[in-house]
Image (cartoon, rainbow, N blue to C red; front, side, top):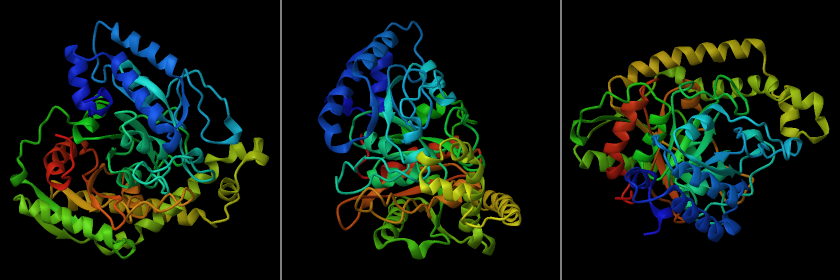
Length: 431
C-alpha cells in the first residue's frame, strides 16, 4: 500500500510512531496528484517544492500535534499566509493576504502540511463554477461549492480537506464523491479568514475517508465534549429515520439509500424509528433561502461598488435584491429558525442521531449544475452538526450517501455515533 492510500487516521498513527515521515506522505500525495490532477482538476494552487519543504520542517518538530504530518487541502476562499486566495473570482487573482485563516492556523499549529488550495464555486456561493470533475465519472460534477476539496479526498490526492457550508456545500459534495464529510455546529469553528456570505449560515467543515478522520480535525478544534465518550455499542443506539419536508424532491436512488441505511441499521440491532417534523418545519427551507439572499446583499456590496465590471451577475443580483427580500421577511425567517432550533433539539434528544438524505441523488452531469442543497440547507439554518456517510450507488454507479444529524453542540456524540454506524451503513469503509 502506498502512503497516499492510507486514511488520515492510519497515516497519523504511523506519523506519530515514526514509521512514516511527513515528507514521504507528502511526496506520495504529490505523486497521486500528478497522476490524477490532469483529469480531475481539483487544485487551483499547488507548489510541490514548497509542500515538500514544509513537510521536512514538520518532520523536525520536537512535539507532535494531533495533525502531525498530515497533508490537508484548503478551499480557495479560506486564507493561507503563503498561498494566494482567489475565491475563484477574476477580482482576486493573485491575491495573497499574508495571514492564515483561523482554521488553517490551527491546523498548521497542530502539525498539518498545508498542501495547496482546492477549486471552489466563486466566493463559495454562485457565479463561476470550479473546473473540478467527479473522480467517479469525469462527465459529472463533484458538487459545490467545495468542489475541489471533496474531489481531492475522493481521488486519494490528500487525506483531509477543508470545505465550507452555507447551504449544502460540504455534505452534498461528500455524497456525490463517496467520502465522509462533517459540518459541525455553527460557530464552534472560528470562520475568521474565510469569505463571508452569510454570518447566520457559514460554517467551516471538512472531509476524510473514514469517521475517525473527521474526529482528528474535531480534536484540533477542541469541539465540546470530546473527552466524554458515548459509552454505547451499536445495539444500544436509537436512530430516528427522517424523510423530511423535501422528500418528494429526492430521486429514487436517494430515497432507496435512506431506507437501505435504515434497514442495515435495524438488521444490526439498532432501534430505528420513523420521525416526522411538526408543521413549522415546512417553511424552514424557504427561511434559509431568505436568510441566504438577504445577508448576501451585504456580503458582496464591497465588490459591487469597487469592481462592478468583474463581478458576476449572480452577485450583482444579490446586492440589487432582485429576490425582493424585505426586512419583515428577514425577521420572520430568523424567528422561525429560532423556534425550529429549539423544537428540533427537543425531538433529537430522544435519539442518538437522526438519519436523513444527504443529497437529492447521484451527481448531475456537467459542471454548471452542482446539485440542489435542499437536503442540507435546513440543517445549516438550524445550526446542528451533520456527518455525511457513503451508503450505496445509484443507477449510473455513482455514490449516494446519507447523513446523520445531532443536537446543537452535540458534535462529539455524533462523531461517536458515526464511528458505530458507518461500518454498518457503508460496506466500503476502509478497514
